[in-house]
Length: 139
Image 1: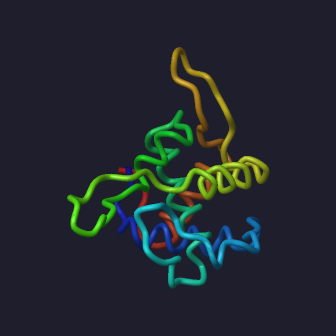
Image 2: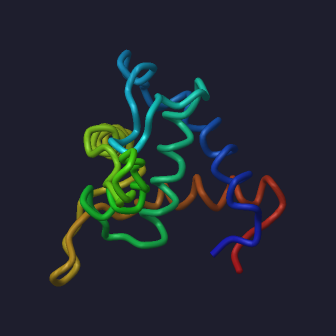
Image 3: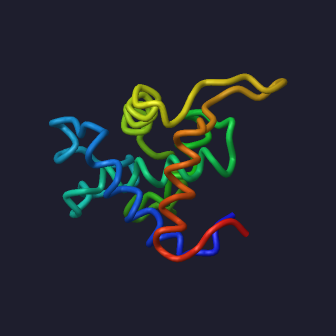
């Protein structure tokens, strides 16, 4: 989709989202899933996750919380027992989706049998203008 480095794109979009999204008070103390041992060390992780979710919705939409939980899940260390996959936190993703929807970046839509969030023109514009700003564009 983009010809720019995706990590740089997510970081730059996260900086843009800082002015519009609100980070909950509990976000500094919460883990991003049962598979994690500690909360994220980065203070701006909420906005980076929101930017990454916005990008994934644009690429794979319509998409819902269940599929996003799988995407942001990981391997849980269970000590002596074999590790196994665990889904990511649904609450974190749900709050991010609600905040992105409230600010007009995404909207709920049903396309045939698929239902979930898709990006609005405002969300697409944010992604593409940021990609253009950091030196890329459409492929």
